[in-house]
Length: 431
Image (tube, rainbow, N blue to C red):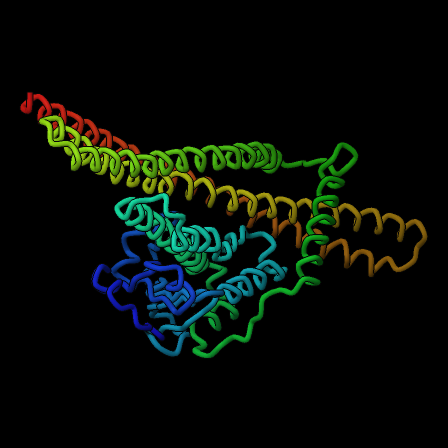
């Protein structure tokens, strides 16, 4: 790991954490952001690891200019692992490789594959810091320091969320009774060398895009008016529900993001107000100066409080909604695979009828029909359990996060009220 020479900036960092983005150039080099103790407090709880036989976490992460390296730490007492505790270093492309390996495996067609973690993207934060570093001379030194602190916090929050999503993906796999037994998962966790997985090129990205278009068209044909008729009320209800649920969660995610952004904007707007009041209080020699300085202090405290409100809402609400928007899409994909299997089963029945009418290749048609029937029944049985578990997991996660967010909102509201009361009392004493 290359820590670099950070000079005077390193003296302002908390113990164990390098200056993540004190200067725009800091992002261009290897940046060690945090270790296990820092990770514990930032994860968004989606699924808890209740099975101690296989515990997986991301214990460390290093940010470089164009990639992030995650240290995946595993504790296990399962016999098919060589050691009870080990760590490997993985990159985002290797997480995507593992996700795609599950999707392409026909044995998991009846399982909700956990959504792939999003690609790390710090371009927006880097650009803001770059512009701030260049400066336009319109900010005072105090405003510059506060704005820089806000951008550093924003960059670190994005990084922590990125790590959290990668960790949740692995924990979902480790907690699943079937997915945890996949050979590729063993390799990902235990093989201590580079997996030599590269990112997708433009041709592969275009191929994936076209594949999604074909899938959407096929799904519309299968589930449309002229398509197959669902014979199981459970799956018909789930399909209708998931379509509506996914659209509403998607809409709620966009609204929650706007709400969080508004809180961040308010916090940023408090910076010039506090700075202006502080400057006026320092220049003014009248009795009013003390009041101006107290108001400047009030706005500075309100800025920090408003920033915490935005951070908590982003973690407890926006991130949760965004995750289940992707997870509900994974559940919809499961229903599509089942609908495709049902369509194949019905087509095999028609093929068998035609073979019997022509008295040609009857045995082959019967074998295909029986295989399609078995596959459909197995997939349906697994899918029913998966969708039931998805509901339990979803309700539990939303209940937990909503309770925690409400408690934090009350805490922040009380702190806000206390600040205003104390400020008013202090101003009255000056009269």
